[in-house]
Length: 146
Image (cartoon, rainbow, N blue to C red; front, side, top):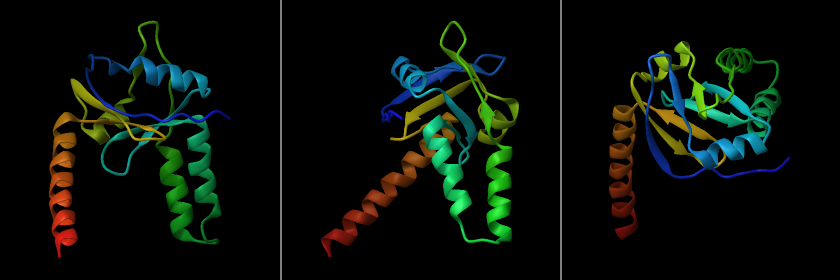
């Protein structure tokens, strides 16, 4: 299966039905990769996994130590938050209410390429992440200078 890398940051409006566009290059890559899945991200964002990457995530959960209550719960949580999606004629996807509520997305969103998948963020939460990364960068530089 062909693999693509997603990169860059984009800002979009989300309409009253929860629809929003994706960058053309992301849409083309996802179509080439036979689609994907929408899911809850770890950091209060929505993740779009290309189909192959989603299968890898499922396989990783299956390889976890067995038998394990944690593995079973993780598999259940991951699988319960997965949604199919498609593009409408205007290149938009519909974000399910459950995912929008989880990620606190209302009328706008930030779409970022995160290498092997795409993340969709509430703009304020994204700015918080960027601020934290700035602090991490400062800490890293302090460590390097010692």
